[in-house]
Each structure stands twice: as C-alpha cells, then as structure tokens.
Length: 194
Image (tube, rainbow, N blue to C red; front, side, top):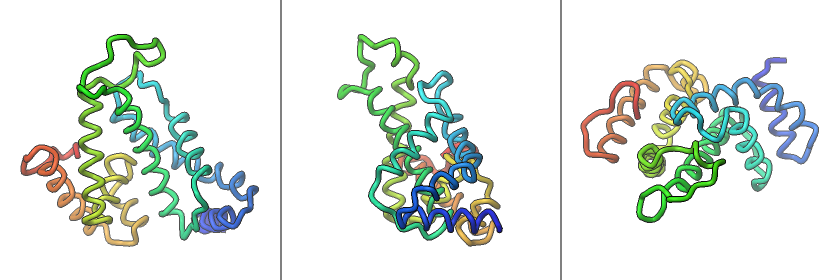
C-alpha cells in the first residue's frame, strides 16, 4: 500500500476511535514530524529548552487531547501538527516576556536557556501577522507555515496543497511581502526570512 494512503486511512480510523491506528500511524509520520520540528527549532536560539523530539511529542499530545478531528488526509494532519508546534513555541515566547516586555529578574535555572526577549517579541509579532494573513488568505498562510516553519520545499508544498510549484512560489512571494509590511512596514522580506 502507498504510505500516503496508509497514513490517510490510519488517520481516519483514529478519528473513528481506533486507538491502535494511532500506534501504527506514529512510526509512519515520525520522520516527517521531526523534519517539521527541526525546521521550527532552527529558527530558535541554540540551547532552547525544547528539543526536536520534545516539540514533536508536545504537539502530538495536544493533538491527541484535542476534540475529535475528522481527518481528510495527511495534508490536514501535517498542517495541524505544524500549527501546534508554532503555538507551543509562541507560548514559550510569551512566558519569556513580562507585561513590560523585559526579562524577569529572577529566573529558574531550567528557564535560563529560553528565547531572548527580542527573539520572543519577533516570534509573537510574526505569529500575530500570520494569524491575520490566515483570515485573509489561508493558502498563503499555509505556504508560509510549511516553508518557513516546516522546512518543506516548494515542490513538497505543491504536492501537499494540490497546486503547481509556480503557484506555491507566487503565494510565498506575495505572503512574504504582505507579512513584512504587516510586521514592520518594509516592502519585502529577505529571501530567507518571513
């Protein structure tokens, strides 16, 4: 059986209450989930309290605890996992910033390696802009999430979204420009940034 069809079938079985389907699903998606998590973690400060596996685990736990999801396909699954990972990192960033935007004077040793204040604030601004873009154009937001945060190539995103590679590239360029203007008023983003 084609692994992509098997993933979809297992997701659907899981959504219908088959707990064994989840156990069979995890090994099939583990490599891809770690790829997404590594792409997220590359954007974080070295020594971040979360590591790739911990980010994957936390995202899966949140997904398992969430309300029942009727899975249509693996694209939906990967998009939701990527969004959960981003939410987790945003939560860590929020914890890093106090109401005044400065670092708390006394920090527990376990929290000493979290994001810097500046990186935390940048992640929060990007998250807010991306959420706004999602309400205006969900596909552009998906392209950004998959490429910038998930580390997917334009070709991989095209397959996930069922569109051409040139469409993904166009959406990426438009989304980058929109996000840059939304975040700081510039006309365009650096090619490696969002």
